[in-house]
Length: 418
Image (cartoon, rainbow, N blue to C red; front, side, top):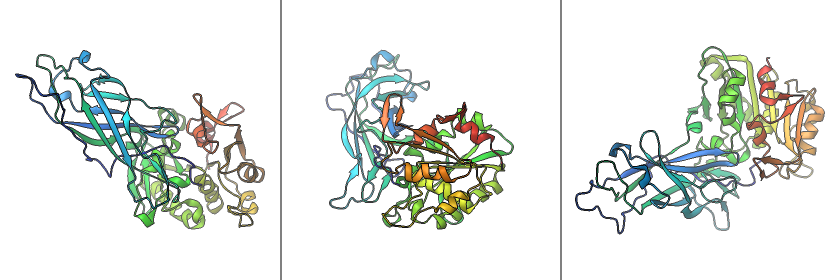
């Protein structure tokens, strides 16, 4: 299913999008250090609710040691504009486009001597995200971001006169967690992102299957291989230090559908299996420790994969997955007989207040039929005091929260072997 909301927006088509301006009223004083154009990168973090730009890093370390007292929240201001990368049809809607001033919360120096402008950000905050959601297409897209930095006071450089900059040039979007996943394309043309563990030797593989909002929109020529990692922490969670410790080092792969998994699960299943088989062949992956997990559309696809390839996975974690018909009287996506025939150890997760994929006819029904399956049924999706839409129960799995009899879900997965 497509995620119901996306409060996110992203960098313009790759690095190098430029935003610049002069500094009205700020001219270099007589004898001052010559003004220089400064490049800045956009620093982003993938929060539970999606990726946001949290800071800007100005490439100033090369200018010499800057005096920290000259850096205050009044030294710079930041304007941000986010627009759709594809045309929006008349009458259509896109969530999360914005054109606003970002609030500067702090200005500091990093260990390289570069100026870092910290920006206000929080779950649910409007403006500052890195994806937008097009309603008619049910898709998250990377929005074109144009950030403009304005300097309002000179910067003191030790041993030199104050410095003002006539121009700031936008660089790339930097998210270390996302950037740790390499870009790949399978033999059949399906794109995917891959995280490789630091440890050597045969390691497990976690396959993350995204929700409906993170697929491609081929009619628009849009296939970015990005939104799977920026829309939520589903795949990223398994690449964290905690998860890597629990799994003893694990590869994590996130394929991207050319549309959405539920459009044609039987057709997509062999394309995913091809990626898994190819990775097992090319990397030191233990074929007996391959796990599949996914949310919403991906929750459906996780279960579908275990019906089509009963011997491929050591464990399956379908989150708020769809099994019932999408239309009244329509065909069931996964028939009862197929669910009852699943032999892969399965732990299902959902929330009672999920109005996008109601639990009873979907996750709860699947739990009743899949032999020996486990179920974590939450009342609401809440983390750090913020309540998310009930559909977003993948947040719990991405944080290793589900637990039964003292065993958390990542530990349970890591102990399964085929």
